[in-house]
Image (cartoon, rainbow, N blue to C red; front, top):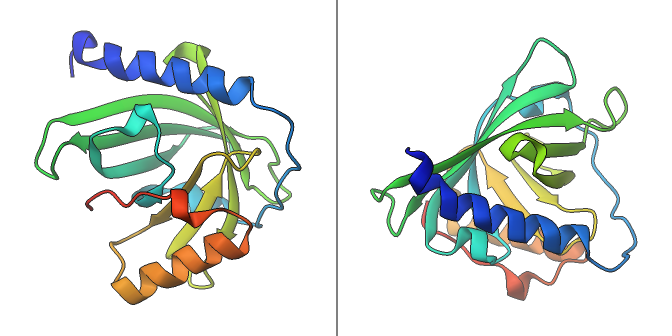
Length: 177
């Protein structure tokens, strides 16, 4: 993708990053304990909090790629514009486990050379490790990810779990897989 195509995505990331940085204080949510294997391969975005950054995005995903350091990961976030066959939009970042060796659940990702930073905390992972719930520390943004698109029944379990964690699930949107 050309730099020109990335500029709107970059501007939205800066705006979203500033909104997170200046959010009011909130009690930190409890995180899950995950293995480093959690940060390998591709996870599909099943549900998310609406934000300008993801307007029109469907078929979202995050791919984690380990680096030489055990607590650093290369990250690619992507989606398709408008439909699952639409134009691919991607942005890359560098993720660092902030709690490496303990819960491995607090990942800080720096995009655009560190200009934009997001904190992603794993709040829950399913017993079979096929899906998880992630949020920012303020619980303003929440994501549900899975290795494959869930059935309607499985999706209802995922949403119920997000609600049990204290998140207002009425805010979630469900982009096409």
